[in-house]
Length: 499
Image (cartoon, rainbow, N blue to C red; front, side):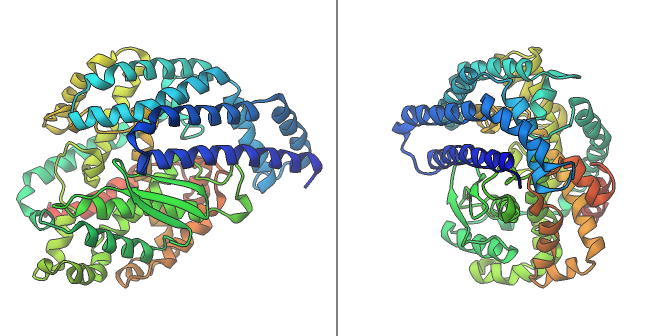
């Protein structure tokens, strides 16, 4: 490639390395940093974000982008043209945010994490309220700095789903919300069909971890390029496609959270590990959007990990690990892990209820950003909507408004991507099975490479080259839709609950 393009890539790699250093400090903060290190860590992260932002938004970067654009030509799908196109979009967005704002926001949210953790432990929103008020005010500033068309929330959505609008998301949610409500009503009437008490017994944490690691290694998570640790809130991060970290949390009397949490985060991790080495060290070396990213985690957690075929292979191994399950038959276990019922905690919600958790957060976040809802009233608004959606009221703030880490990070606009990921997981899986009808039988035999290879070739390798809509159109021939997801849920849960 030309001289100017090569110079652009070299500069972007330096910026990328600064960002990865920040990510490594963030990983350490959430997994092993002592509590006393918060102030210093916030200052360190603020310095790195300042340096990265200044380098990226400089006139030199802008000039290199302009010159490189003339060299790469108009081959839309090429790595070079995609690099310039995507980075130009990032540059246009980032130059709208003053370095002073970025530095202040980074320091604020770095401190906010530990404040949220303490408030959540104490189930006391008042401890977090003042910090959240400052975050929301800065996020409102961000929407004005970035600009938007239909709604200020769109400026936030586009941080995670390039090209999507609040109007589109609301329509997608409205399209499948009635179907979910109807399905939930039918399940509620037949709730006695499923008993998950076998999952709520003592399960040794070390054995849980060993079994979970065995399962995700079978999936294809590469431990030569990956690592697993423990954190308050499970997450996945990466410092390159060859250094991907995942975390989980364990409960000694409930099997589901850690096991399916590990499957979930492994899905994210395998996406990062599957990105083309030709993109390594560049801004394209990451998932194209959070919705597509979530489609991978939900696919491996739910469509694979909660399928009857998977457990026809895995249950005998689980029984070896936990002999008290020896008398449990496959159908009983399959129903137990797919039990559907309203629950307070989003990350523990079943497939049927999950998207309603997201819609609740979407509606509250929109009102916070527009100012229609004051931060001090967020707990009451949360509980009111929760009762409306699920018929139950959170017993305390930890099970309600404080349960998610996202607001302390200042990443409002993130939540809708979870629901979009659920929809895309089925859309993509159906296409994979259409291309390889043997995938379900492969899964039942503990063979996962057919599915993973299809995902690598059609999704992972492209990194950020295409928007989620462009990628989905390429793979499925249509944009994101809820039809496949509702069909999947209706078929699966009608069988489980005898509807």
